[in-house]
Length: 95
Image (tube, rainbow, N blue to C red):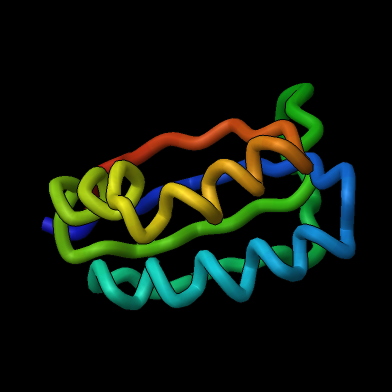
């Protein structure tokens, strides 16, 4: 069953975030993931959530998504992202 990593990112350093995107992209591909949403205009239809930058990455399974997140390859990009942004991230399984 596919799994989706859904991320809301408040970027604090746009220049370094471009470096993060380049580095993270390689690791996502290594673990079988593909970006479905990577930024773009967000419009809230209901509720009080105020998302900033939304990213959705599809992985073949939740196990592969977790393996990517905790991988040595993603360690450096993750540390960079955490230093330059505030991030909310979760995995959801779907059809």
